[in-house]
Length: 159
Image (cartoon, rainbow, N blue to C red; front, side):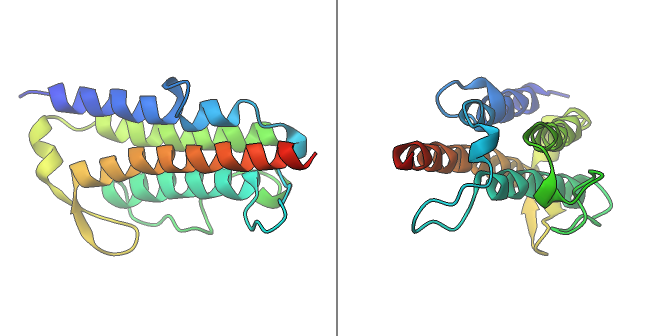
């Protein structure tokens, strides 16, 4: 039973999340400061905190619905002591990394590449092939890395 494609997907997910210097989610968050976290740029609507919360929540929900008991929602994935709106930047990043590790562990737990064809539930109720869900997670990270990059540039242009 081959795991070549699964291993490539783990590599790809890690690239999108943290390894690719120019395009990964974590690399784009690396120059964000605590002062940037809740800044709303003129004409904007989302903050860095909003984006981190969104990215972590979606990762947790994808992993939980496709590989777990399908109980995760937008409202129950945060596990901190204080409300997510008051969480420190460090706690938010740790939570985001936990979400990523949950996805990676789910892929590691698959026994063979053939499992990528299996239909699994999404958090919005459709069934998708496993490969499509994992691709959506990787693309989601890169998409929001770009949004964070743009928002960071706007914040520092204003100041």
